[in-house]
Amino acid sequence: MILGKAFGKYLRDELGIDSLKVTRLKKVFKTGYLQSIAINMLIYNYGLLKKEEKGWIVSEEEKVKILAGNGEAKTNYVTSKGGEIKIKEEIVPLEPQFIIDLGLFKEHTEEEKISLLEQIKLTLVTIRHYLSDLNLKLFNKPEFFSLEVKNKVYTINQIPKEKTIVLNPYGDIIANESIILNSKFFIIGGIVDKGRRYKNATTLLAKKYGYDDLPQVKITLRGSIVGVPDRINKIVEIVLNTITGSSLEDAIILSQSNADKLNRLVTEINKMNELNLEKARELASWLKVDQRILNFALRKSKFKNQSISS
Image (tube, rainbow, N blue to C red):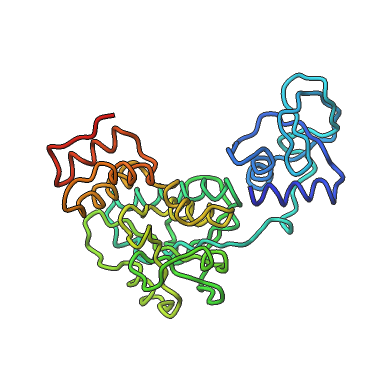
């Protein structure tokens, strides 16, 4: 999306290309054809081949017509593995940067290590919907650590201090749109703590590696961290959706799993002295959950014997 816009401007303004045909790509992302083509160029050696082709106009992005299939519209450019026209890395957006600190990786159990690796791989996929691998960095990466997929994710040895915040669920600063939009670097603890062994693990990492002087920012949903996704890929998704125009609250709700929504709904219902069905429905609407999840929340709440009819 963000990368796709920069790529579209590059095609149109620097190369004079206002149409192209898309053939099979290695990876396709829901955020657009240009975003998908740019990632395939950066990571999988795709390019544009100068060749007259026909197809249907399936989309227009950044004033560039996208053709596919067998149609009558004409273009002189087609995506191709090894195509000679590539994206220039100089036009690839490098802000924001997400930094995952793996300083506690060796302390994880094998199960936790597998889960953490999966979260980081999902984080890379999430970032590729908006930006590129160049927007993800690993700090304190163990020598043996590998993402196991083709990538351009680099390791850093020092934490930048300018326009940097630590996303810490127990931080003393509450995140808002302004903080997110005015930050360049987002540090996230590479932690999966299934056994609840680490108290305030992100704070521990910050102190251990000398960046505890940076703002410790927690993402909350109407004043509470209950129901705020804690998986690394979801945290990154929240930030990216906020950067691209969503309110922080909407970005959180969009990224919630059903389990996150259920957890928050039960918590809010349990705050009631008496069950208020209208209020419960309002909460369900706010969290964008259906009747089934609402009834499930009631069965898990202190009002176990009550349900809401449709």
